[in-house]
Image (cartoon, rainbow over all chains, first blue to last red; front, top):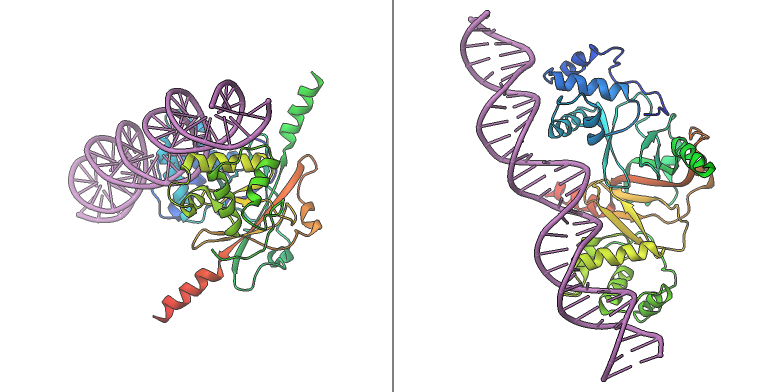
Length: 160
Length: 160
DNA sequence: GGCCTACTTGCAAACGATTTGCAAATGGAC
DNA sequence: GTCCATTTGCAAATCGTTTGCAAGTAGGCC
């Protein structure tokens, strides 16, 4: 999986054995499945669907339902965030050091969602037409197009 | 349904009988169900889910599958656009006169999606961190919070 | 080290939005 | 009015996600 941004987990996870600490810090039990899931989430920079995470795990590590339950736990504990893709599928990204309102890039071709480096400019949060009566709490910005991965593939195909 | 922005359909539909013209203009057959669906989409400013449109139609007008098929047709013909809510549900909005990249407001409380007036500032389309290799085709901006409708309700409840 | 309880898990079934296959109904050009 | 492609209703399939439940296990306690 291609890395667009470098995010760091909170708390940081420099090596695998940190997973246990993280789990304990949120009052969750340390199980082999959870450690593996955290490691996988960490190693594969970017956004995961539950299915993708499940596939990336060593065979038999955890049931898909377990993956869903664990991701929901991470979200509840603010260690991860949910993003809904245009395909209606839920993507998960680990909570990271940059601004909660950082933008994403969604590839029309492969559906992958990348997380862009850098905070959202402050003025973006005050769009002029946003009505007074509406209590704005967050802004999400998603760029859409074709990612460099897919652009490369398309160019190759064009040559052949 | 509360109106946040005033949009105009393309082509404009000043009265109900325009529906037939619109259908003909895209080479689609004029059927009672389609006319009613277009009228409903027109009268209720804002974004519709397929289910909501179906419920707003007079009983027995059209099957839910028909509603889905018609909305897909409108999207294919560029008369409507799809927006995916954070709940993963598809919302439809009629194509309107303002910028294709106009922002939306999604209410955390009722899930309704409003369409905000005004174009997106040009500079928003060139977020600095958006990598060169990524061919950006569009930007979507969604503000999230509590809409004035729900804010009002919450205040009422607080008083009681 | 063994015990106990609350937390986790796998499995299968439920769920809800959306799509599909198919046969019957219908719009509209002739 | 005839005819054919388009549209429709219905029911079943699909697919991501959630849930109920019984069995398994982590980890605090003795």
